[in-house]
Image 1: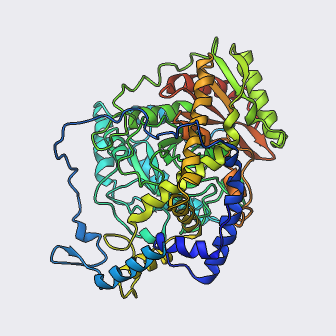
Image 2: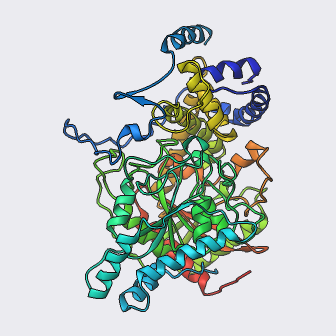
Image 3: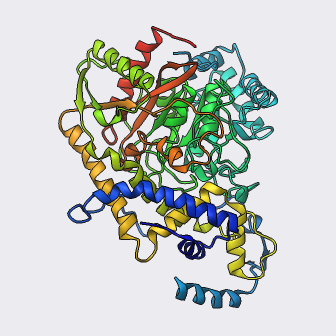
Length: 106
Length: 488
C-alpha cells in the first residue's frame, strides 16, 4: 500500500479538490505515513469475516408518505447565486467535457 | 475532583424556583463570563457565536412562569452551549469551516427543539475542529480553543469549545458530537463529564453529518447527574431521523445513588498497554480499586482486536466523510469561489479554498479508500475489522460483564501545536475512544484525578442502550472520588 504523487493527483480529481503544489507534496507525505500506519489491518485475513454493517439493527419502516420538515428560510436566502427559481452556475457544457476526461483517466 | 465553577442544574433550578435569582440575571451573568473569557489573553476561544437579543422573549416568559409558580421544563433557565455543527435558526452554523462562514440553517436540529421545549437557554455555539475532524480543536477555521486549566494546551477535540465552556464554568451544560471520541476525549482533557450515548439513542436530524455510521450527539456537564439529565431531554425517536430508534428511553435518574454493589466491571488489558503513561494507568487503577471497595466485582477481560481500532475507524470514518462532504460544492449554500469559469471549477476551487488541511486530508484518504481497485483493500478491510471489534464487546458482555472501565485518553492535554504536523500521532489520541463508536455502545468519561495540574479521565462503556448501568457506575465512582478531592 503505497501512494505517490500521481495517485494523489488522480484522487484529487475524483474528490473535486483543487490543491496547489505544496499541498500535493504534503498530502503525498501525510498519506504515505497514515496508510503506512494502517498496514496493521493487513494482518486480518480478508476471507471469513463478513464486513460490519453500520445499521445492522433493522432500520424501521414508516408509511410511504411525504412528511417534509418545512424550511423556516427560503433556499434562495442561502444560495451563492439564484435567479428565477434556479441555482446559477457557469458553463455546464465545459464541465461535461472535463468529466469525461477525468473519468477516462480515473 | 474539582467541579467547574458553575452551579449544577439542580442548584440552579432551586435558585430560580425560590426567586433568589432570575433567568434574566442568569443569562446576563453567563454572557458577561463568556465575554470575559475571551477578553483575557490568551483568549479561551470557546465560543464562535453568542446569542444576544435572540433569547429576550424566552427569558421574559420563563421569568414570568417562575414568578407565577407555573410548571416549567426540566432545563428551564439553564444556560447551554451547542457545538457549532448542530443547526440553529437564530445563530450561524459554521462547523468551524471557512466554507460555511455566516451560514444560517433553514431548520433547527431535533435536539435543539427538544432543548427549547425543556426551557434551556441556548446561549451560543462553540468552537470545534472543522467538521468535527480532529482531536485538539486546532483545526478550526476560526482559531483554536484553549484549555481552561492551562491556556498553552489544547482542550481536546473535536468538541473542545463545548468542553472548555463547561470546564471554565461559563455554562453548566453543553452538547458536543462524538464520532470517534470527540465528546469524551475533550471531557477528559478539560476535567468534565463527557457522554456518548448509544448509536440510535439521540436524533441526528440537524447535526451536520461527518461519518453517519458513527456520529452521535452527546452531553458535556460538570457532573454525571447533569449529563444524564441533559441526555434524558434529548434522547428518543424522531420522525426525521430513522436511525434514532423507536425504543423507550429509560429513566436515567432512577439509578441515582444505587451504587455499584454487585456490578461486574470488566477491565480490558488492551487499554493498559506497556507504553501507557504510568500516571494515567495509576489513576485508573486507583479508580478500579475504589469501585472494588464499593462492592463491584472487577474482572480482567480481553478485547483482542483493539489494535485494529484506529485503522478501522479512520478507514470507515474517512470514507463516509468523503461522501458526506461532497455536498459542499459552492452550488446551493456556503462560500463559492468567485473566479471559477466552469461548473467543475466552481466545485474544485470552492472546496480547495474552503476546506482546511485536515478536512482535505480526510477527504483524500476517504476518496482513495473508496476508489476502484482499492475499495476492498481499505474500506472492506476496515468494515471487517469493525465487525471483529463489535464481536469483542459482545463476547465481553455475554461473559457476564455489566460495564467496562478504561482510560479515556492515553495522555493528558498536550501543548498547542505539538501534534499538528504529525497526523498519525494526532489520530493515536483516539485509541481508547474509537472502539465504542465502532461498536455503537454508550460510553461516558469522568474525571479520575490530576497529573501536574491537568485533569485525566476514565470511561465506562456499557451494552448497547444500557445507559442506566453505565451512569450508575459513573456516578458511584464520581461520588467516591469527590470524597477525597485532590485539587491541583
